[in-house]
Amino acid sequence: MKYSIAIILALLSSSLFGQMQPFQKKWGNADLSESGNDVVQLPSGTIFFCGFETISPGHIAMHVSRHGADGVHEQTWNFGLSGSTVPLRMKYIDENLLIVGLVQVPSGDINGFLMRMDTLGNQLNWLSYGLNNRNEEFKGFDVDDDGNIVVCGHVSAANNVGNDAVLLKFTPQFNLIWEYTDTYPENDVAHEVAVIDGNEYVLAGDRQVENGPYNIYVARFSTNGVKDWEYFDFNGYNGGSTDLLVTSSNDIVVVGESAGPTWDAFEPTFARFSGSGEPIVQVYVQSSPFSDAAFAVCEVSEGLFVLGGYGRNPENDFANVDAMAVLVNEDGEEINRRYYHFGIGNDIAFAARNSIETGFLLAGGTGDFDQGFFLVYDYFDELLSLGADREIPLVTVYPNPVTRGALLLSDTYFQSTQITDSQGRVYWVNDPKELIFNHAGWYHLRFFNERNELVGETRVIVR
Image (cartoon, rainbow, N blue to C red; front, side, top):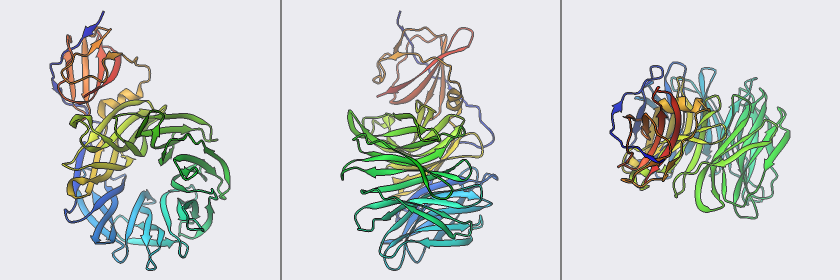
């Protein structure tokens, strides 16, 4: 028997995890081109944000700003006022901030840089590193149990054709210990590195094949810079990696974007490997019929991940590219997603990082100020608790996707239905008879029986 379910919406307030309240902040200067690249929260709750802004035509300065735990902008520092400087990754280590990125030197070449600053905005250490007449970019880094800093990126190839991936290890005082340069014959770049087992390192990047598509590769290195293993499986579809982490269970998770066997648009990708390099999961996290991407990943609880990036938002008929957070389990299966829109332009999240409370922080750029900055804190309230329970059965509803105004059907009767929309608003429908959605978007449905027991869940997209 088919049951239909109708919606009389009653807005409920969500319970809060801890004292932090969700927020969305944007700021910037309409005369400047700006973008945020990373964010970190200190144990005190204070948030630091880094990005870049255009000081004058052709001159980009590094922007570091401090915010309260409510996201309110408190102070900004600019570095690299004498030469273009772009920060790409930032971490809070030993009560200071470490930042890597790229800097243009007087010769015109691009060098990688490593900088340490204190939380009062004072620059403590600085290193610009590169080879003469070649460009070298630092893209990501981590710090091992001995305090050494391992940095990844790429250097323009010796024959000036393409790039070679590099991995470098520095002492805490920024002295070089060793440098590894990949000898792959075509273009390859490294995007992120993470410490595993205390003093070894895993690297993720992209490789080109026959001057055509790119695919991800993953490699593990010993503490002395010797490659232990490498995974590269060319699938013929263009794509690549953007971020990597070592999970609480010591697996390796890599996210990115890729085209696929039946579509040309990019979709977010999620891959999980064992510490010894065996692939466990490699999936697409498909969404709209347009290009979407994952640029960052954080583990918000054991086996539960948030992917940050961008996507075409179904709530506005896919008209805008909006910042996006996707909640997935350890197999890359989507639990839910949320979009963040700041105005009339496109918005992209380049960083997804853990907060000190339950939830995550997003940082990126908004097209609302030519291109400005945005900062988001969210905890996906009900969605986090949903992801923690793997035993709830999936309920089939159809059609899915469903057109606005059309009736949604199920083969199961429910006493009540809880509906969470893509903005985190929660609604309840008791003794449902019909379910008709009048607004496009993503909706998460949880179904309860007469004893108010959770008996199933599903996710619906309305177009």
